[in-house]
Length: 329
Length: 230
Ligand SMILES: Cc1cc2nc3c(=O)[nH]c(=O)nc-3n(C[C@H](O)[C@H](O)[C@H](O)COP(=O)(O)OP(=O)(O)OC[C@H]3O[C@@H](n4cnc5c(N)ncnc54)[C@H](O)[C@@H]3O)c2cc1C
Ligand code: SF4
Ligand code: FES
Ligand code: FES
Image 1 (cartoon, helix red, strand yellow):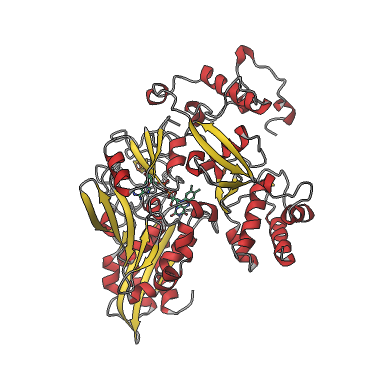
Image 2: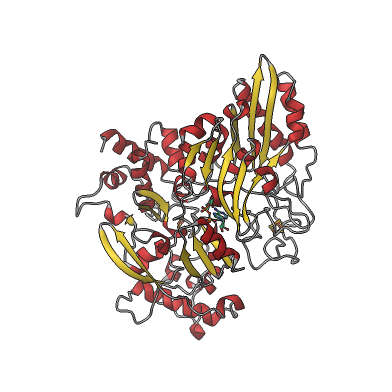
């Protein structure tokens, strides 16, 4: 691990100024991504700014039924918070299906949004990887790519965004509240992540030194009736092979509004507005769900080992919708 | 059969001061200069001696580490106050030191195990202010002023904690390497209120892997303690 200077800040503005003034500085929250990657020399900050003393831990109700989650709230607290369990069940479920109880006790919501890919080559400094070392090449495209992405990829990078919570929150129109050296701004979570294109090292619109303050979740009928389904290689403590976050507002037998996002398949949490359009106004039936699932995966570009993800992601989405519509599983 | 167990005995000497392959640190350790180990420090134990000699061996065998690692001056040590199993320690640490290394190498509390060192197994589970976390991904400096409980802090003198006793009764281990982490989580699962059904216990114990596959005994032990209402 590269040596670093450690400091602790007590005001968000100070944290922003310290990191933005030092190109090699990084915030640290739970450290479950950063310490891991520093130990294998994938992340090599010269300065580490501990933000845990900042007053960003609260989970509070917003007027109109929404919820604001402070960036330093822990995954475990958010997962079991009554406002989340009742108003945004998909978010609670996604968190409970993430990592392990020990990691969830340590990891923060802001850090969770910023977690890095689990592409094995990204973690191996002996091999080329455009995300870690721009221009060096992508080892995954012609290598082990079973777990990697099929949507939003480029010829430079096919790394999957590994997060679960971000998939559920992308489906439910979350908004990220950010403080930077020039002031505060908000970004919709669906626009927060960017696809790799020719710059896979850039994963979000967050600029160096910008601090995530909180995430807002707006209330909606399809948020209160939402569900997260995760398919893994083992029963627990594993990243998604595929996952689906869905929200439905069904009146009579007609779908009034729908939200769909997929995990495990995209280079970013994969919101599918096309699938949503294929659901709205239609009866909540198996045929509708299957048609929407086909549309959600229509742009998929599989590689040598991951074509199986297309039917698997479709079935994951159909099963999640069926569960929500009350057809059981 | 691949390697005879006997061939692993430490007496075996290789020519040219080379280390036998199983003693060579994994490549990622080449630039991690075991910050907690200070040769000549009064508490240098056999264990830390092994760590020093492996690190030196690695330096001899491996090509030069990347410039970014070697050109940096060692960082200033930081003062950390840590309460461990009820006793307060004033420590001077390299900020890189993990809570796991602090416990094992500085405080001699080797009951907490280092297995994956990347958050993926749960062997290093300890409580910080009563909450279970993975000590391998925690920087000690971030826990200044906090209270840590390790497996050594569970027993009351010679009297085992009920979870420890139940693990013995139910054969909740074989090699024992994951066991302290399993016991720490077992106690937490009950305290957290996640020990209802067998399925619930399995899910909330899933942050602790057992390579020996002792899950049946582990589940039985957790249930016994839950039912005893301790
Ligand atoms: C073994 C293992 C299994 C896992 N399994 C899963 C899983 O199944 N599903 C899943 O979703 N995740 C999983 N994870 C990832 C885990 O959820 C993340 O590591 C965690 O959420 C990161 O949060 P943190 O607070 O520890 O982040 P940190 O490590 O502290 O920070 C991560 C990054 O975010 C930046 N950062 C932190 N806070 C802020 C902020 N407020 N503003 C701006 N930048 C910030 C840091 O600078 C750093 O670059 C797993 C991790 C491990 C180690
Ligand atoms: S897929 Fe992306 S992260 Fe993986 S090796 Fe290729 S460039 Fe690196
Ligand atoms: S050693 Fe910490 S989780 Fe494996
Ligand atoms: S007892 Fe050997 S790993 Fe669990």
